[in-house]
Length: 522
Image (cartoon, rainbow, N blue to C red; front, side, top):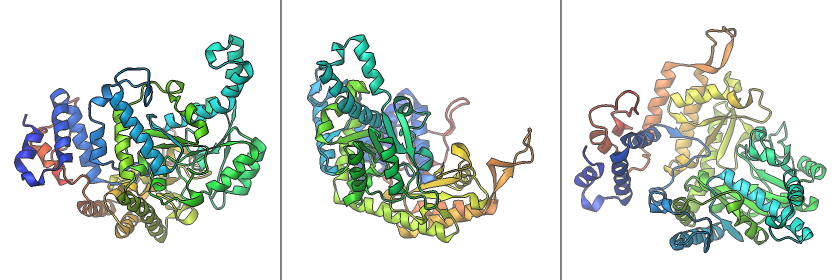
């Protein structure tokens, strides 16, 4: 088998060699020595992403520098504890990396303290929850009992403390109103820990009703007032929410996973920036922040010690290679270029929303102030699942999503969620957003619900299957291909190298991974 890296070096003039491409092909070669099927799937994924417009609001394209930071021997290192306070020797370099990432996070977001170890947003939320529980419930109880650690408590004292810790009140946005499953959804661990109460949006405007929320806060008086969303397209006044939280003695925790990049890029400022107002802020480091998959916790100084106890409170050892990638991403987020990028995300989302409205799509709240657009597709006679499938068939990747008070439930849904972080990373602008909106509208108009073909429901309208007009599909796919030809993902990587070297003349055998032959055309 010919080396992909060798071919790249041979066919590329020295002055045009790209370090990112060298690293990519070196990794592909190294993986192929052990498990070529994995290499082929990596190549196939890049081909797929180059062939489809990615409109998933929670995804992005990290830089090759961020990806390279994850591919090294740091993955071998155990580093339980936190920077310069480990339970293992030999963590000097991990200490330096983690410390740098924490300082960058504090600088980028303007917070008192940062913790960059969480593996995901769900981990970050658990650490945030338990840091608050430790600070507000456990430590005062220790002081009352004259103890410093849980090991000093009798079994009866420990059981009494556990009972207090595990039934505190949490008030959060209902997942079916735009919230998140880690915010008290009954299938999630958060609902097992807390006595969960929820708030929704106004059923007519689909906006947060601050007067209604204030009444809810007074009624529930939760320990934690959790704010954040996965499908809410408008700005939030965090100054007002902090004042409300203080008035009822609640801790204000904000999950900004979806809009962290808009905070870092100084799009959300003043009362719309949660960091100066929240006691604790959690986030992912991907999505709009454009880093590796992972999480982060920011907090006021009073919660720093408890947050730093994420290990052993919630986690074991952190992932040093991912912390390295977070440091690289945060360095990128500290630049003026990222600032421009973040502003462009919102500009593009607004134009996309306008184009959809113009085409007759019911865009909830009439538009957007952030990176996402939430659309109700039922006026086209479709469920979200059918619309998602038809759009994907034409080369547009997004996700179906519940809309507030959704009658179709969380599987079929009535809505779509569209996001602009990825297409903005590719360099697309307002003109391309109008083109995408027009393609979406044409596909929705050219799709109808199919009927169930067998079983007891035979003849009834299906909520999953659909029929897409073939002419519209062909036209849409052609427009998508033309659009993507001008905005190539990772243009320094020439996939024809893999087609003629790693993949060779045939697909892998039955039972293994099949990879398209003509990858270079995508």
